[in-house]
Length: 225
Image: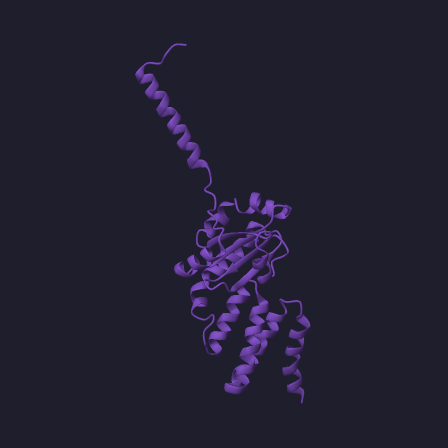
């Protein structure tokens, strides 16, 4: 075999280098997942970012589809960079799955820096659906941190409920609004009607829309009496 001259060898090396660089540049960067729950929660608290949890299992076919079709999506990865991504093997961490009621897989959870659940998605979530939830979680998170777990007034309770609703968690929103109505009846009755309307609209997003309808019927009955 004819040996290449020094300039030719240098040229070949440079060509290989640039080809390899081009391939790497064209490859999408993967998500760097944390696999320790305590470390992820701690990092979220320090960085003031929500935790994105992918609860999966090796036997879960939809989980594999999420890996192939969703977590590899460039628009999803762009948003995940603003979160603390955490992978939880459901079979290896049954305590976690039981605590967050994440037995149905795949489960996509959003937690804050204290481990409190913000919202969840159960089953396969396509990029559009996941992006919508991530946008809501991220955009209101700073305000959420100023409200969650703290003593807040009625307006603060409205804001917190609105955040949960925007994130797709009407159940937590309804719980907050019920507490707000109870407080308003004691402290500021002028806000009761507005809070009841918010609760009725929220209940329409849960499995109990009939409860919301009953709440809306009250003003009509009061007006006829």
